[in-house]
Image (cartoon, rainbow, N blue to C red):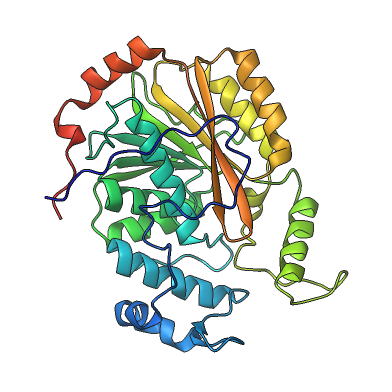
Length: 338
């Protein structure tokens, strides 16, 4: 049985500064991709691998088919996920960044677990907006053994995610349809249901026009066009529901904070990714106005992309200790055998 890693020191609320730090120490993707190993795991990747301008083996990250093939290989090689795929119109997320978020969330849970990262199916996680890719539950269960509920407003996305779950005979991931577009928890949570963690990667934009402008900027940053050129749908393009919602990222997170105030004892830690630094002041105001017990910001960075997780809890230290005693026990703090 492997030794249990302990969590590093908790990030401070000012952690949005100095975002040049590397990937999380437990992230399996911190170094260069070993394409020979990845091709051995998923031979389909070979068709997209070639030498780049520096003579290194790589793929064209502006090619959605290549990125999907890379993701399929990474998930198979690192996490044992087979048969992963998604319809071409859906968001194809970067696996290293998604894994990074999960590792930092594991550290967050350790704060309420005697400094030990909790393992096992007793730890329940709600993934708001699980999407067609189902990446967070797949990686989170592989790395920590947690059980997941994933919700989404898109039935087609849920069908795609379910196909991957079925292909892997996965019993620890459950999917639920969210029938109300402007609701986060209502219609998804069952009465008296408890989660150790809620996680969310909300839509960035307030409109499809904003989303298209963002895709055009990314296309230009990849050196594939000049301002004003038409940008094709990129691997990070996604469906409108994945990219846009009423009020954009800020509106969604503020609604999430407001709804969490109605279910204060249903979850230990509520968390969300925040893509835009300009969103943070409004989020902090909403947290202060709501009166949460504790909140913190966890900085992350992958290459030139900077992001952060904002987390909050309504439970004080005594209540968190009671949660630990009632929900986890000693068995939930034992790593899975490998």
